[in-house]
Length: 414
Image 1 (tube, rainbow, N blue to C red):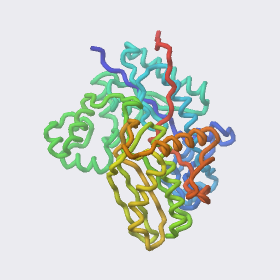
Image 2: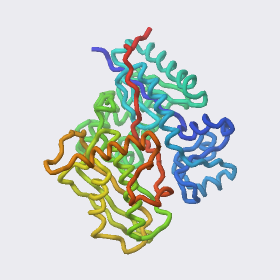
Image 3: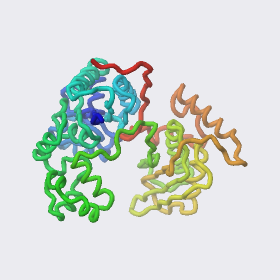
Image 4: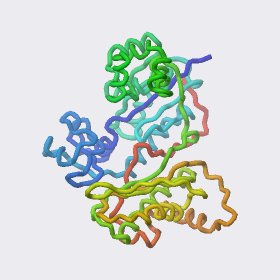
């Protein structure tokens, strides 16, 4: 049986690099992409020049300006990043039909069956990197990892230098790499997990590889087996296509600039968050049977509640009614600074409706989606949202899926 060949591709400094690709005057400069253009706004992506100065993801705008007064701050443009990702992912679909979009800037490609050797895999890796620069943008770089498990492929791309690749093609090569890095450089092992492992006498990846799996499972439960299997080159999940993956939840939150408990104002923002959530739900052809909604107060405290719904949620109106029903009996007495809603217990849209449910609302919602797709978001929207055009703007999610073009031609390699 042929050993699996899995390629992981991770775009470098993606949002910031997209901005530098779009505007050549930004190339070579310290660039930070922000969620909100305010002193307490957060850097969500920084260019390689910014990272060298300590301006990293999570850094506040005011702190970034202290580190580098000349930093160029740009409010994020989700449509730009999504369209760029679609072009990149469509290159991937020239090589395999098994693609897992792990996030908006990285993906796994299962090349098993399409290539027969590590040499071919290396050639494909180089070719993809060159095509991204030639067909999408010369300023866009990527780090790639090629191995026989999903974990090792991502681990390889994480530790290799930017704009390069690393191939882990054997157990000896895997052990060589394990001996050259810290245990926290492995995908899924952060500081808290490291402390737990240290208490078991595990300080390196080779320690983890040799540790009895029964002891790890006794200490960590099921994740203990995953840790052991990953360190021993055993595949667990494999590459899962977009169709095979179901998100655990879809939702949106918003930090409110006008901190208040005014019902009309908060209801408008809640409706907009429900519309954004509903649009993503329907784009993925999903329905939900759970709702979570709540708020955080300016001076501490808040309210959060989840509920399993009797009927599936699909339309924006259904989501809003379910969210409002949770919040309304516990309406905030103090000023609200953050409002959020998410749908859970997701499943594929079955098309089956409750006996007493009219299809008019569903059909109307789908028709409005088509109009807004063609003419722009919120071309037609609920009157409850009136006056919220500057609130809860579109934000790009790292886990948001993108369209991957289905290629009809067969995959051929030399």
